Length: 153
Image (cartoon, rainbow, N blue to C red; front, side, top):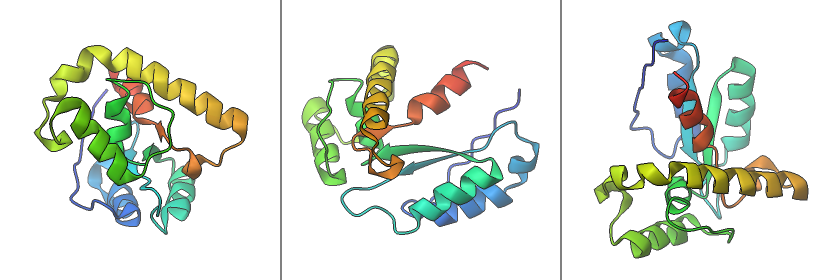
């Protein structure tokens, strides 16, 4: 299986990420196409619901984190089910590690990936049980689904 990873500077622009994923040369020859995107809380991206719908129609998978990617990182260190804003999640990660995510050695978290995955799955189950709309599931992260798929290669 061939894996192509395209990192875009279109942060905060789900619609732009979808356009890039849809139009990129690799999208036609890849087994799977994923978009990794933050929901942002409390004011999520205005076009996110439409982007999720369009991506699903196109067969593009989305790994959403709510409020942000730091939610996924926090679950490597501690369990939390508290709803957080994007700002609060970033501050909590920094408080737990002493670093901003972009200045943190992610290798330090690798051994805790199974724990983080279990925490993310548990929260996903609770959100489904409670009938929470996918984009309102805070905290949540689908990053484990992408990683599980990559680890299966």
